Image 1 (cartoon, rainbow, N blue to C red):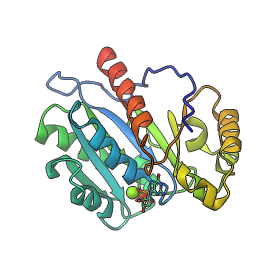
Image 2 (image 1 turned 45 degrees about the horizontal axis):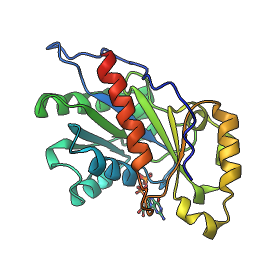
Image 3 (image 1 turned 60 degrees about the horizontal axis):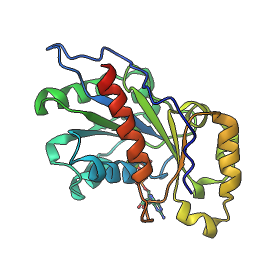
Image 4 (image 1 turned 90 degrees about the horizontal axis):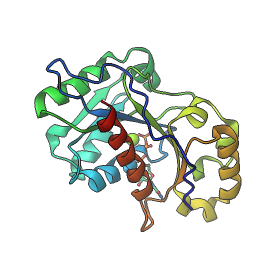
Length: 227
Ligand SMILES: Nc1nc2c(ncn2[C@@H]2O[C@H](COP(=O)(O)OP(=O)(O)OP(=O)(O)O)[C@@H](O)[C@H]2O)c(=O)[nH]1
Ligand SMILES: [Mg+2]
């Protein structure tokens, strides 16, 4: 099921949209959400889907390891120099919301070293429902939950579910096995988010990351037109 409610495609431009040399900097999209919901899998699929048309890079955040970056490197979703890991050493949300310096340095270093980039995906470490990105770090954020984490999550709300620019409800292929009510999740998400978009996704299906990639493409188009 793919529910994509109509949405103003414009992105909230956070920090300065230009680099010191006057060139437009990359659009930065953050992916947050609970542990194991499918953030890295979505980043990997987005890279494969978009890498021929956009110049991409990825920053991953893990608490004590570089596992997510290592997974992306193993999968060869991008050349290695385009994938950077930030070890947060503390609550993941601290590094994406409170002290964003390590992440800002990572995105700026990528642009310095690789040259002009179109899109940088920043994956937060898995956290709880309260984690959101600082608008000083990303221009738009995706909150990834999954149907196996409980079909009451959209109803429970929290800033990720209610305010993220895109809510992805992942692993819909597992719904029959865990007894999740997708229609109920869609209704709860709609009640929490009004017109903000929601995409139900299974990376195990033929459709895969397509709808989320289309959303990211539209964000980039709006960014490129405005910046
Ligand atoms: N069945 C199914 N499994 C999925 C789907 N998407 C991801 N997974 C699996 O779910 C597990 C966790 O996925 P990750 O992408 O590592 O999750 P994550 O949100 O990055 O996890 P953390 O970074 O540890 O918080 C992996 O085994 C994935 O292969 C999906 O759509 N369906
Ligand atoms: Mg991950």
